[in-house]
Length: 120
Image (cartoon, rainbow, N blue to C red):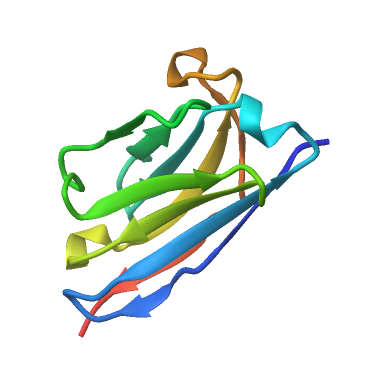
């Protein structure tokens, strides 16, 4: 049974940084694309970034140049390094596991989410 466990969220001041982590168990992690989505209060869930099994990445325009998605297959973990955080980055961040090696296969398994709050 696949499990995804996120960590690393918290309260940070505008301009600060956080690194989110998502550790996956129950599957051969290296075979699957991974993603981070987020959902702000009163808004729909939105894509933040994706990374394929081969390491190709893609980002939402709102986070390009500030966020970096990466993966460590030896640790079964995907990361989201978030820099120059803004108040509009405040959201619950969810990690998702792909149904195949590229994002085109879709994402079918999700973690419980981790809260990121950007505020002074």
